[in-house]
Structure formats: structure tokens, C-alpha cells
Image 1: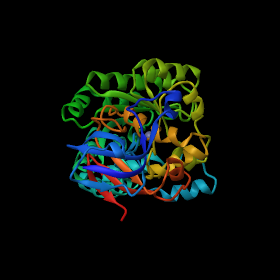
Image 2: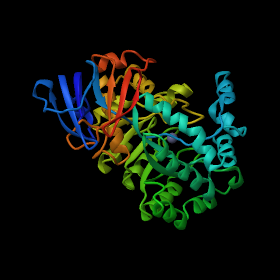
Image 3: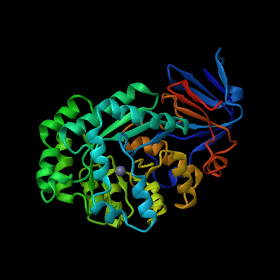
Image 4: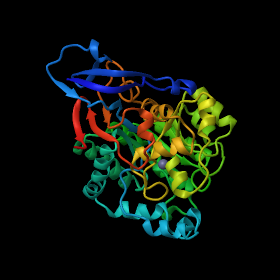
Length: 408
Ligand SMILES: [Zn+2]
């Protein structure tokens, strides 16, 4: 298949792209791109395009790699709009949590749901995300908080992989929150949730590629988090970390120490944390949907880019602190409030997001041999896309060379 009439092709190279490299992707005006066996075979100026019997017109639109959302809390059940209203009336997220709300409400809903129900309520979410241009997405457990319910969430992810076109990458987040029945006994909970037999089962059944921990004030401390991540590593699950979101307790330094593929959130990151991520080659995943949704200070993302880190962006889609499934909305926040350029934002949501989930060699780039995951936008430039927040400019979504969504 030859994709022709591309107004502008944004040539994002494979990630991770650090610092100033995030501004470097080339553009080709009047381009074409050839796909063979689901992969990019050739791209360049249209007048040099090879012959191909099957031609698909991009209608003069901009073409970019399919978006990668590297941090979501799909699959979840239940909803917390009542808490949203209370927060808007002045109660804090923490006060609502201490009064029995927050993650524990979602945990109850997930425990009450069957695996089939989890699949049924999360499938439409992924189907909508596809229309916004997401072609690869990370999904986490972390609301079950028992071995059985965590496995149920991971199995729901495995089923969701087969029910819709978005490629899903699973993460085990058993140490997400302390469930009520373990109140006052966090170390017992950590023992249960990082039981080597459970971690081995997750790895053996290929239920997850990564192991994540919420390492922060009010969640798990550095020692507890290290224990879980090391056991995960021994079972073959690569570390990831929810780090430096609420308070600086050394979480990002731990991410570097264990060689985490990414450290996510980073609102309170310090110089030691930045140095640790640089040393370990970890991707800094920034989640501005959370700070937007909670009305708190954003992560100083420019500082991370200027420090030479590869920065990725994600929705953190979850029912409490970022009920935002549209990655384009996050891209708009990143431009307008984090002061990232449209090119940096695109790289953060493609090449670097792919690197944050270990897929940079296959997705997130316009590169020969990469999967042909592509978006055709109804705009003449990248800037025009991000200049229209709230309006979906994705005209066509292509996954592995096949059109999987068309706005028409
Ligand atoms: Zn999260």
C-alpha cells in the first residue's frame, strides 16, 4: 500500500530522544509512504515514490506516527463523579481518601466485577481512545489488591488485547494502595503482593511485562518499593515507578538504582532524581492530566528536557485523579501549560512513549522496518493540530498497515 498526497510527513525517529533531539524531527512536504507486511517499507518525497498498485490518499493531511499512551489505569470499574463534585466544592483529594473515598472505592468496584464485566466496561474506553489516535497503550492492574483480583485485572487486559485494534502492554501494579484489610500492616501487604510465586505466575503466563509501585507519601516507602521491584525483576518483570508525585521521598533515585524503564509523575523531582534517571537511561513520563484535573502544580517539564532527559507524556487515565482518556487533550495541556513545542509534544507521545514501555524498536516512529502505525490528520501542519484543543483532528488511524478507524 502506498499512502500518497501527504501534505506533511513528520519523520519522528525511533526513541528515546533526549533533550534537544526532541525538537529535531524532520518534515517532508508532499510526501508518500509505502507499507509492506504491516511495516514501513519506504518514505520520502512523493515524486520519488515506488510504484504500488494499491494507493490510499492522505488528502493533503499531515501524517504522524500513531500515538502511544504509556501510563493508564485501564481496566477499572465504577465511577467517582461524586468525589469530583466534592473536590470542586473545596474538599482535598487526601481528605476524601481519608474519609473512605479514593482508590478504595475503585478497589471495591473492581473486586465486585467479574473478568467479563471488566472487559465489557473498558472496551468502549479503548475504542474511543483509538478514535483520538492511540495505537499502543499501557494498562495496569492495581485496583484488585489481592492476588486473585490483580490476576483478574491482568487477564482482562489480555482479553482486551484481542477485542480491539490498540496494542496493549500490561504492567503489574499490585503495590498501588494499601487495602482497608491491611490497615496498619503495610509490610504484610507488601509480602503478599510481591510473593515470588505470584510474580512468577504473572511472568510465566505473560500477563505483564512490567512491575510498578506507587512510591510516595501516603503510599509505599522506598524500602517497601525496592523490595517489590527487586522481586519483580527476579521474576523477569522490568521495573517502573510512580515517583515524586505528592512528596519528595527519594522515589526517583530508587527508579535509577533499580534501572527502571521509566519513572512517572515527577512533580517534585529534584537534582538527585534527574541525575539518577540520566544515569539509568530511564524515560521521564510526565502526566499533566493529573495536575490539570486536581488543580495542582504541573511538573516542570522544560527543566527535564533541558537536563537532557527523554520525556514522554501520558493521560494517566484513571477514575480519580485524571479521568481523561483523550491523549490529544494532554498534548494541548503540554503545549499551553508546560510550554513544550508541538514537535516536542509529538515526540513525547510517540517515540519516547514507546521507549517508556519497551517498544521503541517497533512503534512510535516513522522509520523503515517500524510497524506502520500512522495517523492522517485533517490539518496542514503539526502546529495547526495542537492549536485546536478539544477538536479531534484525526481523520484516519492505521495500525500495522490497516485502516482501523476513519472519521468519515
Ligand atoms: Zn498512575
